[in-house]
Image (cartoon, rainbow, N blue to C red; front, side, top):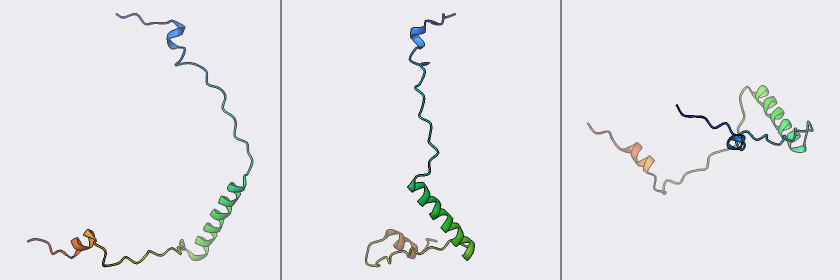
Length: 79
């Protein structure tokens, strides 16, 4: 049976104490306030309309641009 090394020097780097982490301060920053206001407005909007309202619209894709996906949709299946 092999003998285990118990010298403190072998394991010193593995079990070194880490420096204490700085505790988070419980301050509300301006960014936190803005995010909270946005979230609250979003939840009110959903409650008012019953679903999320999206104002983003997809851009119109030009049919002139080569699209392999569009060509595959029009192909007839082989029998």
